[in-house]
Image (tube, rainbow, N blue to C red):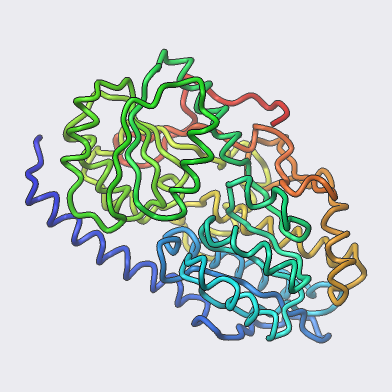
Length: 413
């Protein structure tokens, strides 16, 4: 059924309001910005180990940052319930940079002044990139749980920053495999206007020499109408559409509009839409059917299944696990392991060396054989392409499983 421009704008306006409230509620689950969060120490009785978290809970990255932030808090509580780290409880201190690169230095300095021994950088990629030089000044090691841009861990100033997931360069390899499998030679891009997506597109599209970009359209992250952009993509006569956004209202509006105007055109997206279950129910009925997104959740991985069971126990049986959850969980476990290997958290140099000594960690995301390893020269944990899967949405606007046409092989990245 055709959707009028007025109806689309009205729905989009409602989506913006609903998702904004959802982001604020999610942020509220763990306490306000600038606060020291004090979870139950469980059986841990030693002096707290203070860990800082830069969490975008109100800016453009909030739609995914708050998901990961909630699971970071859960993982911390789980560790404390089991005796802490070396008998000491973990205590989080949290600040919000709103995914604004200009606010990052002051945000990290606040966390350091509160006694943080290490940091979680749970914000937009463009903001995290700005964190690198500040980390060097502070001397604090940091993990970016959901970062996917290789610039985050590439020189310069990369001595203290680490990332888990496959990068956009790996995504490019997987997308190229998919496009070649389906005979797709020319694609159209529909992107939001955030700095995070601008940086991601530069890296991703620059690595996709396998396909021609026939047209690129951009819309405001808070857009209420994308009909003109989609019409221009249609006129470009591309073989498929790739939506690149941080998710939220923009992604839902994009998919609603594409489903209405380009129903039979193959659609691909980033991980954002697959990792934001709250958005699925806001899409028009059947609007997500056939959409292929870059996923990392594979229930054949026993660690993913175990984490899924825990998250459902904590959050309710209808909770949908996301890659953000799994990467957040693994980030906390990796830091715990590093603290133990370092003999404690109080010497940042030893803690940094301990992170570099972690090898073969079996991740809670990716395929069953997927592992994470770090070294002095390898600050990207992913040990192969099998940390990724292409997932297809079904008619019920929910992911129905791996896309049958193509899956990345478990080979070196």
